[in-house]
Image (spheres, helix red, strand yellow):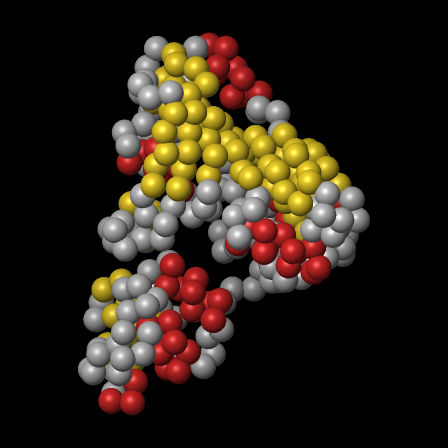
Length: 299
């Protein structure tokens, strides 16, 4: 952890901006990521990027120790829902990490995509995240778009940023929800107690989740979900917060379920977006994973 003391020339400056002055080796995107992960502290506390510095504040920045990871193509079977010269949309299985990172150097979706597409992937996502424009948690299955070139990557990123991409999910939650449909509007931020977890926080980022009940079972509810924002773990955090955690979620519930399911029963079933080059509206669906169908049949 590197520490910096704010002097008179650095007073009343936004935290995210003052960090660029204190450590010129950090890019803006790196600073944003460090702030989101709670790895930049002010007087040992997590603060918003908009926090204004005060004289003698102690800014603590966790040192980044890069570890080399060799990115290699691997012959891993993946289900392709749509593909052309600019994009590829896959149905990611549960249990697969999207891109390599420390602890998951291979066996990821990116390794599989590289084997399929060779060198035709956008480089904007960085060396370890070629073509990746959005993400799904390791144990969330379903549709994911990958850009094959930079032009497609930029256009898709703009659509996601402007909330023009329609994302729909299905989930099985514990408990019987009485409302047929509802909207959860609760801000989400990094948990103060556990930096690996997210939580509903007053000073978090705006997060909106809509849901409709598809079917009620004895002790469970099957939901159709649409998100307006794409915060980390958003659906899982929101549903757990209102008392209906997703079956199998080991992080935001006790994870117990009589079906032996490991990982949350959450599936990204539908995507609607404009093709980044042609402008054609694409409406894509991914079938439910077999394990998900089996659980619903048991219920």
